[in-house]
Image 1 (tube, rainbow, N blue to C red):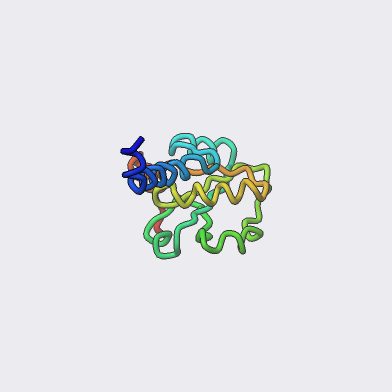
Image 2 (image 1 turned 90 degrees about the horizontal axis):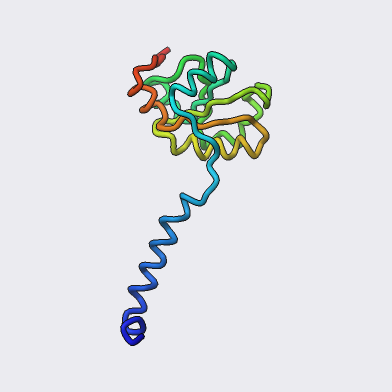
Length: 133
């Protein structure tokens, strides 16, 4: 017991870092799909695609027919999506982190949204087409 009392700051630091590591795991981020599952949603269910990267990243390469609404603007521009809320919506970013946050926001707004796991990087790794128009 004396050891714990003498090293209370160390134990508080360990407890705090453990909690910090658990917070992202416990946050609800929405459903994720692999690139191949996304292709099926796009081709079979005519899913729409929203890219939440900034304009420069989007211009460098994006999924065909994707609509670009940066994550920072999504809350304000959510009504610009102009799609049926029951229709599948694939949300994309570079690595899947921003799209997970966007998916959670879109799910709260009533959309049938999923996040592309691994983002555009995983899409390119799977040798799927990128548009640069």
